[in-house]
Amino acid sequence: MVPELPPLPALTRAEGEFVDTYLEVVDLLGRINPSRSTHTYGALRAAQALVGRATALRDALTLMHMRGESEVHADTLARALRVLDGERRAGRVTVPEEPAS
Image (cartoon, helix red, strand yellow):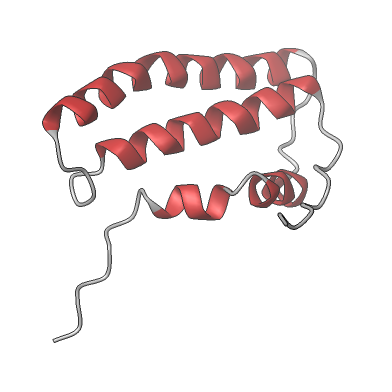
């Protein structure tokens, strides 16, 4: 049985888009990470897709700004990222630990 996840915090539509596109960018960076990728083609495809997702991320932040959402509520967005498995996903962007000798 899959454990029940906590509910997402209440987000504006623009904040939701911000979180979603941020995680898409993180996923692509994880696929590009030279310390974790195994094939150039997959990394190339992820790099090509990164341009579009970065544009979507910029657009989400622009929309927030234009709507008067001038503050990023970091605690709330961090809770949303945790619910959406952001810690694991962001971990793929880092360099893995060296194996113990």
